[in-house]
Length: 297
Image (cartoon, rainbow, N blue to C red):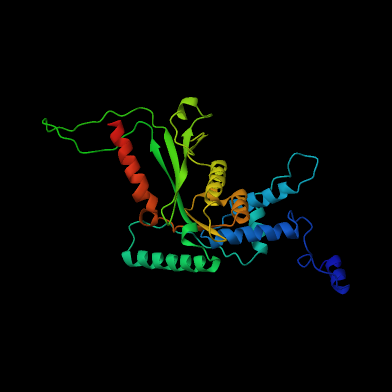
């Protein structure tokens, strides 16, 4: 037995395992803020993964950083694992992929459970029907039509000319349960907005650009501000409810802070069920893509 260990035991000093580590990166207040943020993510249906723990912890560090360098030192790759080891209420489970073609009984039970949870959530926050919104996004390839039936007397396969430009345009739409809609955002793959894009743009429509043509964290936050600006004029209750899918753009600290500040509750659709539960897919996006293809033809 080492002398120093025996001496500490004799003097009734705390052991190394009992002492509070001196290298905690977060203060007690920051640690609690991180925990509350992760709890909110877990409540609305997202899974908590190590990457988001690390990124949000670093965001908290940057807010109060006063060092001589421009930013605090990056957290190590094992930081989230050690943080989880100190917060035992978070249990590690394996996320299972869900096949769309699953048994009907299992599917119905999962949907029934989700709707029961949604009903309880709405009642708890006293959310009014006209303050309940559903948002989704879809992408169209520029100049690309869909397969279709045609008539020919040759009895041979017919090929439709297709443009070589396969770049995407993304639309973000939102509707409420009483049929009110939010003017959409159009996202184009580009570095800047071209003047001729907006010459025929409808009033209150927004157009943005991204490197991929898809939405990203910054554009999603901009859309949320657009949503809040329009819907606050018609809000009747204390809280609004926004139904969303599981995209990681809604996981950011800035997104969560904005929703909390402006009384917007988030609730996610179950994984792999948007083809059933997402009304925008059927009532909005499918007709849109059909008419878009008709115009190209």
